[in-house]
Each structure stands twice: as structure tokens, then as C-alpha cells.
Image (cartoon, rainbow, N blue to C red; front, side, top):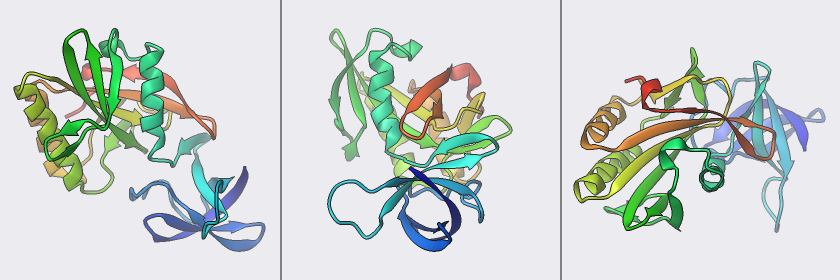
Amino acid sequence: MVWGEFLERPSRFSVWVKLNGRRELVHLPNPGRLLSILVPGRPLLLRPAAGGPRKTRYTAVGAELEGMLVSLDSTLPNRFFPQALALGLIPPLAGWTLAGKEPRMGAGRADFLLRQGDEKMLVEVKSVTWVEGGVALFPDAPTARGRRHLKELAQAVREGKRASLAFVVQRPDAVAFGPSPIDPGFAKALREALATGVEAFALVCSFDGTQLELVRFLGRTALRL
């Protein structure tokens, strides 16, 4: 891996960086706004592209921020969650096992289906990179999809299933979590989902450039509404 310097963001999935004194277009695996992270001059960790031919030679996987490395890959939480579950790192999910990926949920799909005996649980995982004052905030852009997911999780509970919302915080400095002010509709949908019986928790992680490692688990008492 190599380091580059963020210059600008021409599209949701690409950034211009300065690399070895030259401008280089780099793939960004994160559609979020990342406004507090992608500022000019920010050091970005770049991984050489793997596989076949691609328009970009590198992928931006991390950002150096106040002495820590923040993961920029919004797909990494969905790879981390099954590992954390299998290792027993999620207290409210002790005894639950992975029964499937992308199960049907309303008009769309959840991320995971868990099973414990005859009981089933739907789990939706959200990637978080925005932290202010120790509070991990989601989303960093208005999300109609996120609001729909919450309503569908709540409906699953009404139908007799269990449902959980897992916020995977891809930086280690959060001590609480909650909805951001960016999307009041998401905050409202979250309150309604919790009242229905949807469970919510956060997994705060460090990032070493390749994978996430759990730093702390945050349960419902750390949720700021």
C-alpha cells in the first residue's frame, strides 16, 4: 500500500489524489459524503487494484485523521459482522448463528438472517465513519433507503421475528452512537422502530489498513436519540 494526498472528489466513487507528485484518479468504495474526512490535504491509504483491467490503479481504503486510521470501505462492515458474530463479540447475539445472507425483507433485503433454535432474526448493518464529540453519527447524507430499512425491520417484529440494527463504526473514537441531524426522517424512523421492538447496538472498531478489529461494544444505553 502507498499513501496519497486527497485533492478533490469528482464523483461518488472516485477521488483525485496527489501521488508521487502527480494527480491520480483513485476508486473510492464509499458513496457517503465523508465531509469531515475528505478535506484537501488529507492523507489517504491506497491499495493497488486487484483483478482485471480497471480505470483506476488504486483504491482508497483509509484516511489518516487525528492520529487514527479511518476505514473508507463501506463494504467492510458486512464482512466484519459475521466474523464478530462467530467469535462471540456481540453480547446481545450470543447463541445466534448465521443462517443466511440478504434474506427477503419487505420490498427489499436485509443484510443477514440469524437463527437460534426455531427463532429467526433479521439484521441490517450500517457503516459509520462520522464521529463528533465521541458520538458516532449515521447517516452522513439523507437516506430514503435507510428509512425504508427501519420500517421493514419494524414490520418484521410485528410479524413475530426479531430484528436488529448494527452500526459498525469504522474508527475507534466513538463512545456513543445515534442518528445524525442530516436526516430527521431517519431519526424519526429509528425512534419508531425501537418502540416497536427493533434492537440497536454499535460495534466500534479500529482499522489496520486491511481489516477491522472490535474496540468496544455499545449497547442501547449508549444510544443518543
